[in-house]
Image (spheres, rainbow, N blue to C red):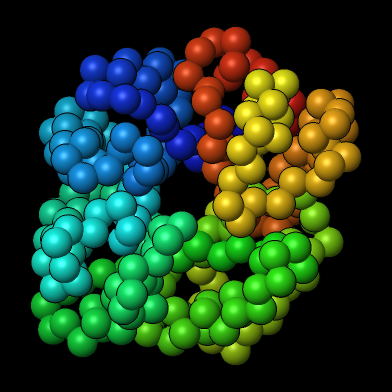
Length: 265
């Protein structure tokens, strides 16, 4: 089951990253994601790429490149840093990029702008993943997600779609169906976020909800109901050829065992 999942790593420094990568090797976890948020941005993000490329090249790594967190001085300089990162990425095997605008979009420097600029580059070999939030229309009164999706894939540079976490499978199913029936759909690799429930996670989310993440009050008030839903979500992903991405901490024997037990059916 582990080989069919992706795991997102969180860390504060390279030493902690090394420990977690060794844990992954020990437990035969080969597919990992490196986020670009919190402390993992700018120098640490770039150093992480160089460290993994040099010391752990056997991993299949997806880097989340946040245009907001990696923004540097101005749009032109930020775009140059992005294209340089992509060129370095292309020199490594088993590395890919998920391009995200970030929670606070930079004016004229978000994913649609950047993809349109990149498709005009003559010597830039690039395919990127894009994020998709199926819950924005119903729960956040934002109706532009489909339109943004169409603009992104129209560039011809997209090879994967990454679904945001939420707790309405009916809404998720509706949007997955929309994407698969789209005339421009090219059979992209599909990925779906999973947040493994725990009392600590629920407490933190209640105190500070994540922007754009919908979690039903029913699941926030019952760890048993949340666990049951998470298993249903995992099953939906599996039945629809969507690779689950575990976005919560997993790098201890106890936590990894909990995840394995949660998804065993």
